[in-house]
Image (cartoon, rainbow, N blue to C red; front, side, top):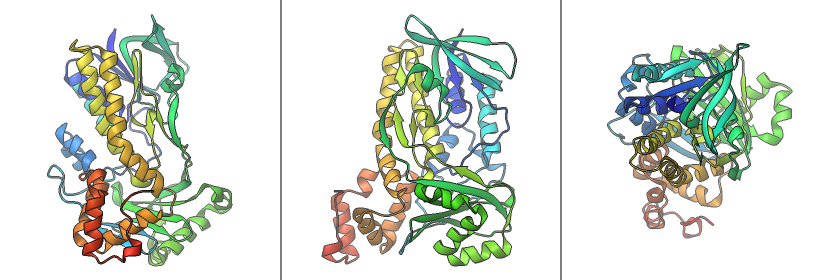
Length: 411
């Protein structure tokens, strides 16, 4: 019997398994994929996420694979323009956007090195229950015979369409409709810095360097325009870039060479699922999912897998009831992620509310507050501090924002 079975071995599951195994717990990780393998992702890791990798002693291993370091970011919201970078967070002065074929393989390998057992190519078909508690999983590798593994605790780290969540009956208790769809691909021949540009007409361009000298280039539009987009994917893709940042559209046509097929991200609604129950928990996108607009998926997976690992250790070591400890993990996650969730859901509408328009417009006129903006985005400055009414009042005063444009509280 294992102490913990983790279903899903990517950015939430492998770190959780690694951290538990380092504490001496017997851990099994299963995943239907085999590694290295790719997955739909925009790859971005904020400084706050890199800080977790640094603390775990594996950031240097990622950096050694030579993902391009980014130290200058450009954001725009129609006619509001912000560029710069956050102050260091735990000494980290750059961000990376590694390919998932590389990042996930490192994380799986680190789980193995820590002592976790990893079974790849394993599809879970059922969660075993005993005395009303999750007590293991059933599944198979390919067309092989069904196998059964038992454990004191089961964790679903298997993504937004989590099989474990469905099998344990984890209901969604907070949901915000998804506003947009995303298409992206990888391009050779570009020399762009990080770009996150929202244009008129509710459309967005994102681009940043990744491994192999390539750039990930993504576009977003409102979901109601998806059929129109699909009628001519290549043409629509270029049309959005041409309209949002014409000079980048021109450069892409002249110098960019698409290296892979387009990938679509038609995300489900943003949600929180119940993520703790008798003998089970959910982590990563399985329990808490939001639009990719703010790029917080990987960072949150790393951050909250560490919180869950700590709470599971408390329970498994006998210092407190396991279910009680894991329930505390969900409360911490919900409280700490709420600001990111709300900001993401609002910005992903691709049109600023009067409140955010007022705040970001004033921010763009203040070098000091622009740095704070990037600190907010990077996870170094709490939203409660950035958006505090007293701080916004000072910002508006410093930049001489007209009185009728000053909004200090969300309506």
